[in-house]
Length: 254
Image (cartoon, rainbow, N blue to C red; front, top):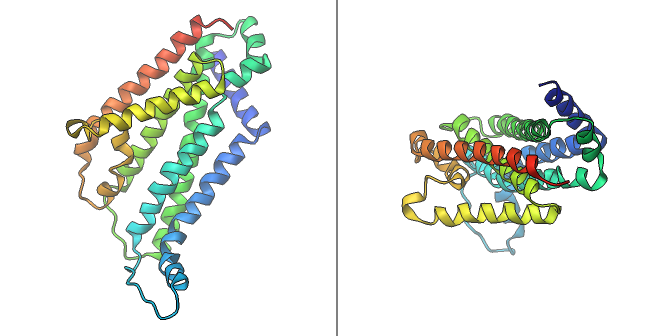
């Protein structure tokens, strides 16, 4: 336990030195500000872009448009930024030799993987929470009459998918020595989830369903119980991938 806490503190200190913390929080803050502003300004931008004399009917933006931008931007750009930031979390230290030095001093390999995963989840949670909070504040201000359903559960689904993705990235990183190989394996895992979701019977039972049904949740066309199976499967897969990363790293020749 002491090794775990010590290495977790080391990860946070390193995130300050390498600006990972700043990059994550700044990126998610910008996305949080952009979401409601894009929704509010889109009709005006379209009007300005139209040639003189040409008119196009544009619906008045609502709170749903703001949250649609949140799930589009934070759920795509934010996830990509997170994966890039953590892409070399194992291979980077192995290439620099810092991790090998600590392991030879008696640091548990399990503590390394678990502390790294905890740190990744904490930083992802902070970024997503910040983006969600900023989006919510601006949305309430710009669209005071908006009524949103199941917002907390919808954001939880996005958070859980990110946690699953980080576990997949960590597992891929424990298998591959190069950062590029880990990213390719992670991409293959996401592609497999997308392919499975195209099967009608599995449409709401894969991890990818957690990031495709968000708008349905807040518009109340999809009920939370419909995604409980996907959430449960995603949770089990996340634990399996994290455990797999620990087992693989224990036997890995450094």
